Image 1 (cartoon, helix red, strand yellow):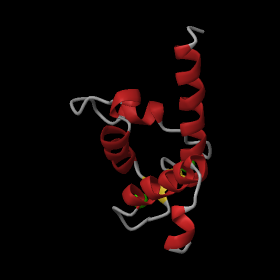
Image 2 (cartoon, rainbow, N blue to C red):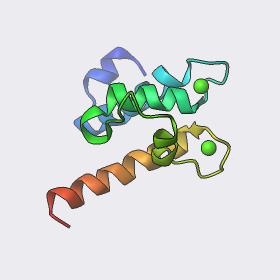
Image 3 (cartoon, rainbow, N blue to C red):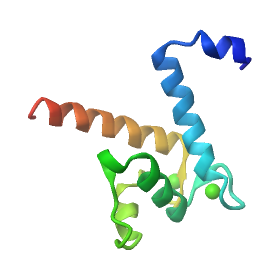
Length: 100
Ligand SMILES: [Ca+2]
Ligand SMILES: [Ca+2]
């Protein structure tokens, strides 16, 4: 997308691009740049979601595995699984703010 188009984007459109940027920033840490490994997911969660989903650096990666949405059970999180995790988090945040 051209820079001139980007500046006209709505807040929600920018948020969607931020999700993509965040995914690829961390997914490209190893040879499989289309998925987040357990270690990449841990780095992403600690750096980008510390207030909503902070995982203690002292925790082993089992806690990250519990958070990861791994629908196809391949031990990695692809973009589809990542976005589903984020949407689940959004619903959880909404419910928490409403005291549900
Ligand atoms: Ca990767
Ligand atoms: Ca997976």
